[in-house]
Image (cartoon, rainbow, N blue to C red; front, side, top):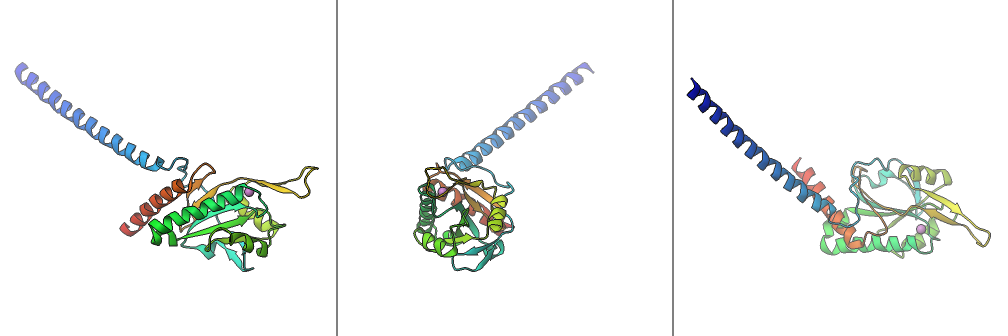
Length: 225
Ligand code: NI
């Protein structure tokens, strides 16, 4: 009786030991996997992991050729979207050049992926940025860049949808107003889901790497499912 109990206890403890060992092993494997995924996700320096954040939605604007343009115009495209204004002295041109450089990196390394991305500039200064002005401006950056502007309420609406802050600023010394505005480049997926936000300190290399990574993952998921 006591011997049986002792044997049983030993067997139970042994099984428990194995179970704990296996459990720890699985936990460590998961932890390592989690770290790999994490490191992969963090590879591009400043890219934020914000997938699933509610940004975007319906809008009605006018493109550089005076054509009515809505979110449906770009249905099924990946989109790189930058909000700014053509009179912006420094930051907008820098960020749009960076967007163009990002596309060129992707075009060289991955022409098929690059072709699926529509670059878009949206004006936050509808008072001065007419379609003609926008057309001249976007030509400086990338041949496929689309430039959108609209009426004051149309621009307000798209700013709200994309959570863009932009406001006119004029001091007494200034001949004309300027526009203080947020400077983000949004990376949106084919179903208008936000895949990434890039900031001023992200380089074109960071952005291209992050975009390629996310597109490969998305394309694999959709072809597997
Ligand atoms: Ni600007």
